Image (cartoon, rainbow, N blue to C red):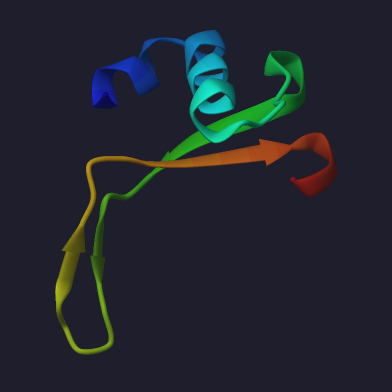
Length: 60
């Protein structure tokens, strides 16, 4: 899955739209890939495979 999200912007948007029933338009969003490791207040490590931040022009 992680590889699919990084292939291309068009593929990523289409995949997000299909998986989460969204209606993002490729030319109207920006995609950023965030750090996948976080440390909580109790110093516990949280590790994810991938964090994707999708911003529309209205919410940049």
